[in-house]
Image (cartoon, rainbow, N blue to C red):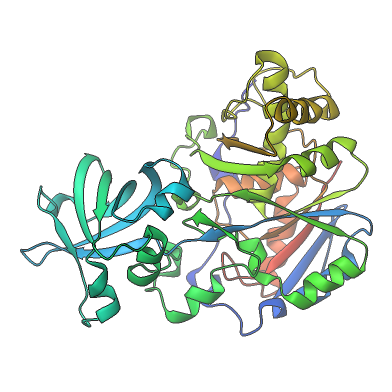
Length: 403
């Protein structure tokens, strides 16, 4: 049964001065709140390894933020901002980034009403020769409100990934209320970011340094990665009082066969770095259950965890994925998820969560509440009264699931 949840019950007072507008000089110098069994403590993030269970499995999201915000200009002088969301032609990220002449993307279009049928030229006010050499232009193929389908063309033969690196800017969150700056190119990216595709960073990972990672591994904790490309929907507030009416956006993810097989054994506590890693890992159960019931890999619907009682064990579901991959000579599961994790959700894989402090009335607050069995206010009241910094560039928390 879909739970009845009212989003206004998940609000808290977040003033603008509590939002971290810039990262700290040192990634691991941020504060770390520790929540375990209803008790709250705090320390510094660089000591994270000391507080983790040994012989655990720690899972990171290695997606890489792309400089997906582009600024164009109409012949009339009107400025049009284009924010690339998802490739359409080619539809696979790696193929779209490898394209050397043209590709088509679903985009958010700023000032969309001013864009008619003309072809836009890239806005290059400083006359940057590297930008000019790309010869990048944009043509509107179709529109749907504030989003549209845009065909990009360029003339210098570079892959589109390089075009974005030269011509685009990092799409920092709108709540920072500032323009992208040089520091964001480095710091709005995790150290271990590898696979291009996100338009927002998995921000829990922004605190990790090589020293912190070395300390984690020295404690006997195994580190593995998944890849979920974070979509612009991560910025969207819940606009309906009844959460059941809020549509979740689809996000593509990939998980290796070897990691799924290890998770199926269930021998180690699982530590997820970030809510994106949680959503990826917890989606695996429903992928496997779908294989057992329908014989194929299907995206995870938003309310799948709540609409019925699932009879398969976690091990059975995960082993079904492994068998499917083996039968089809595949070494990676590639799928999509719209899963929403709200109070009442049954966690099947994740035991410990590293995460930042999230916006009021957001789906991420709902996830945190589900993880700590409704005790999220204890965590947020402490953070508000003890000088913690909030949101993407803010401080971190280490949450142990209440079972």
